[in-house]
Image (cartoon, rainbow, N blue to C red; front, side, top):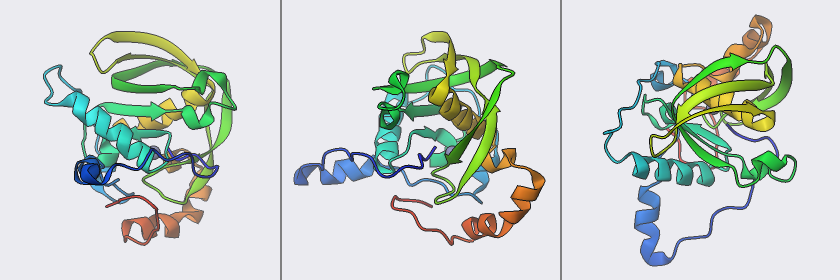
Length: 205
Ligand SMILES: [Zn+2]
């Protein structure tokens, strides 16, 4: 997920001799129109090769793109994994302070009746922001990067980014939640993404 307000503190520049290794770990982000974003993703087995390295690389990729959330399909992998880094929202919401987590095989199994609007963006749809209505709180079971099981309730901005990233695992993007009228008004913008006509400050494909 792409936060609307400004850029956030970038991570420290790598020392010159580390540059090759540093860049090697940043994945290009898959842009709308790529079929990977529309495929449902598969659960991850505990013996999935180099999962911790993949999660580290995803955090680096997310930081480079100044985003708050990234799902594996957005780097071309149809596996049930997403990460969030809510630290850019730490000042406005205390629960977001230093909140960085990986979620494996998540399952949202309950949602609040109360819904709210929020202006969402997505690293896979650069420059597009729309008001999206979602439940304000959800309950989710998931595994962390050590395959330890958790069952938690999320609200506020964390509930928002978690629902956005969770959608990616089911082949959905935030524009799917808009009204048919709004979607038809955005048709040419969405087609432009698919044709490679977009601008972003991070590596994309
Ligand atoms: Zn997204």
